[in-house]
Length: 143
Image 1 (spheres, rainbow, N blue to C red):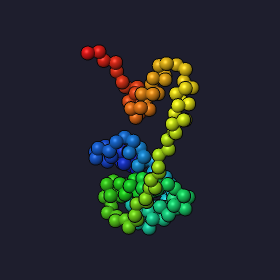
Image 2 (spheres, one colour; image 1 turned 90 degrees about the vertical axis):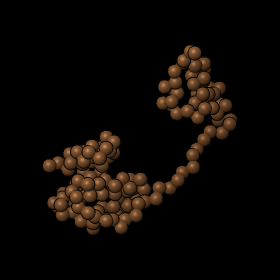
Image 3 (cartoon, rainbow, N blue to C red; image 1 turned 135 degrees about the horizontal axis):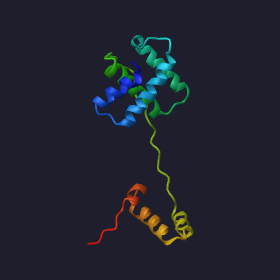
Image 4 (tube, rainbow, N blue to C red; image 1 turned 120 degrees about the horizontal axis):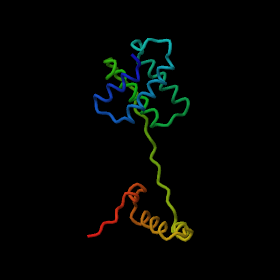
């Protein structure tokens, strides 16, 4: 059977989100393309570590490495019932400091907006710290 279908079935059984299932399927497909001449049941820990090393050589981000590790681990342990204990440590993801506008930049942003409704929306977003989706879902309720 087609491996992404197996991942989808097992992912649905385990209650994974559709997005996670899609990501795992995509990562596993790329991994298996790398070992196209090899039977899926004959893939070893060495193959996995070599593939992760290849990703590291390409300067893949820490999150990407972690997703590939988790997807391959899911394939091996949950789909193929092959117990592999990996000695690969998850990659640390560097924390980034948030960037923000200065007071002057914020004032200039508000001054440029001519539409009163839009200006109110932007000021509400900024002052209340709302996400755009939260602003969109606001309802005018009369008591």
